[in-house]
Image (cartoon, rainbow, N blue to C red; front, top):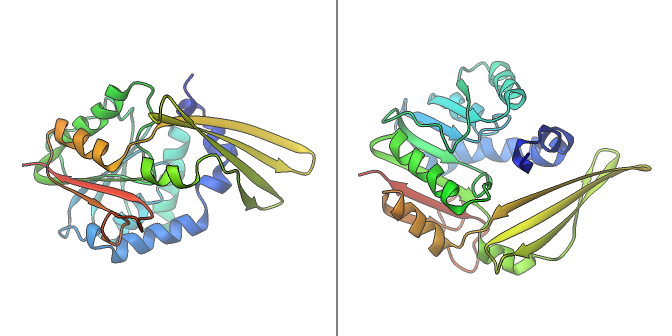
Length: 245
């Protein structure tokens, strides 16, 4: 079983992955980011939606949102978040390497480094191709992640995140000549420690731009954060946006 198929990772480390702060920031992005100023009523596909961190605020802004994820338990949580917010969204259990709805969406989003999960680089490219096929002409794909350039500044330095009653220690290693990275997490509460690890591809802006081109996108742009700032030495994220002709 691959790491992303292990629900224990997503549930056991939910306090790190799905924090209230992250939900608040996502709501702020949807409300204020120029990259999220979609046409009213836009049909939006949220790839790897998880517990609906972006799905719910997108639906709150009147977009017709479909969230796709592999885990039914996460989809149930996402549906509950939307219900609590008083909005509706459609949820589909599917592998993003296979999920395609030809021409059904105006926007596809893949947020918070939910890209690069698969061991085969071509599978990651297929996710972009599926997004392209699922977009109507003129539709846009937005991918948000930490880039190779950003990992270069702090990879290898352990990081500690406080959680209620304990802490999570994170350690990163670069693999395969900077093609991928491995993150090891240890959750410590009292005398109990839980471990998890994940391995992802890590892409530079130039590499991801090339993948967008191979997937068929045009008008490809790179940004340094979701506020639309340039992708330069001050960037905090890599945001790549492409358009289907």
